[in-house]
Amino acid sequence: MITSDNARELRELVRQTEARLGVINEMESLCCGVSFTQCHAITAIGRAVQISLNDLAKALNVDNSTMSRTVNTIVNKGLANRVLDPKDRRYVMISLTREGKIIFDEITQTMDAYFKKIFENIPGDKRNQVLESLQLLINAITSSVDPNEG
Image 1 (cartoon, one colour):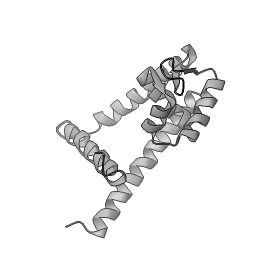
Image 2 (cartoon, one colour):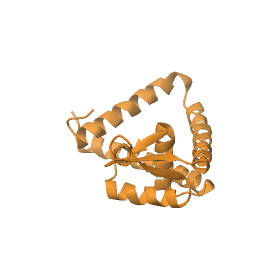
Image 3 (cartoon, helix red, strand yellow):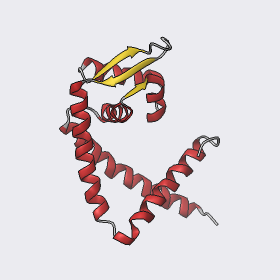
Image 4 (cartoon, helix red, strand yellow):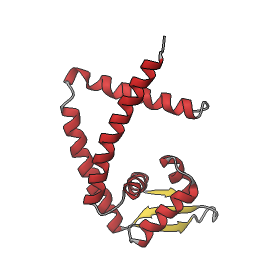
């Protein structure tokens, strides 16, 4: 049986995780000269190579107007290009510039090294369990927000 105490414990553990990761992300973002939000956008664009504004907003779970402002900022900084999709001119496609790719690579290397350290601090026989548990948590969160997903 799930109790209020269980729910509070989960909430507190997620809050602590989020707070610690937020500090990590903020430190990482500052070293690359971009904000936390820009860091996430650059990472998503870099992973996709080219992505529509709509898909980027969906991937980062933000509304299109917020994503548009973030993209405007990284375009103005010379880190991304915004081009109308030749197949459907209603869609804006975003890709990284050479400078954006450099920032993306810095972000990736910094975060990979940090999370490797974290992973090394998890006992070897528990590492897969941690990954599986985090995936279960993500699925549960997704299902509670949108019952059609997850």
